[in-house]
Length: 275
Image (cartoon, rainbow, N blue to C red):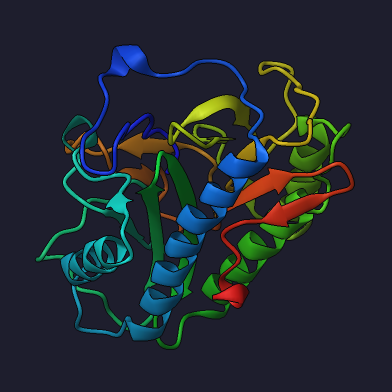
């Protein structure tokens, strides 16, 4: 999730915002082992949702399933209850970019581009990941947008290693997106993740001098999450104060992984192929 942060200090109780840790944290081996577990829970839930979603279900159905599974695996939903957010997932459809609130009246239909973002808090650490699902048969444009969004994520991840810089991965993402005729949403970024759901640094997906070009160090854990629009890069937020949509009603797609920086490269902690 792009803006949710510092949800839980214990598996069942959130800490006060004043206790949120600041600065970039390097995780110890013990902490990384715990993050592997929280990330595996997230990966498992998203893989299961990708396999069960079908037309006629509602986003509230998916949310109930995600919360049930997260709790069954001994974790707590990272998103639920934060500043009044009512869901355990963000479910955003078609022109909805991020932070869609699960709703029993929001029916999933054939041809939809469905983004599902979720997090799990386990033994003091968060995992965070997002997938975009093509519901049934989608248009060629939608299929390309989803494919390029996932490719862009991995183009960025491939740049990750100790000694690299955030601009290395941001540039790789931006180049791939633009080469395929899409735009990068700049209003939301990835982030560090660990004890807090949203930690420093901001992990941007485009070239900029407006945010610190942080040098990566082994032990950093990052939520890398490019968001692509088929049209304008700009978004607006609906009256619910959460759901962001494209300003021109164009489609949007997003993928996200929690990634560990290592001395020689990276480890994708939310890798769904390993669950």
